[in-house]
Image (cartoon, rainbow, N blue to C red; front, side, top):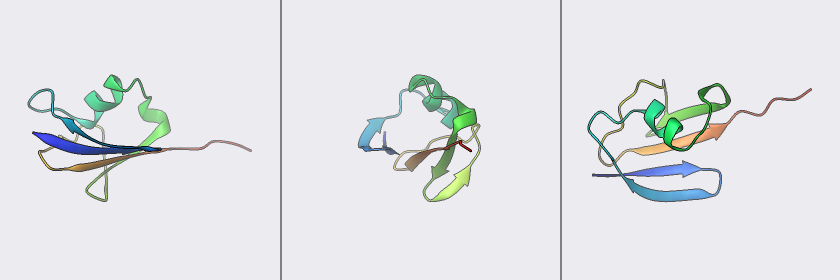
Length: 67
């Protein structure tokens, strides 16, 4: 059951490691902080509890802080 992950220069197909695999699980696996990432599922903004489904395109966008 693959999904597509897009993050920075990364654009790859990944298998879902378990049922009910969420955006939060993905961020944990990638060792990314949810406070610095905006997540999109199939082009729509989603929350960390969103479950990733077979065939989804997940895009992670790094939030840039600065002054």
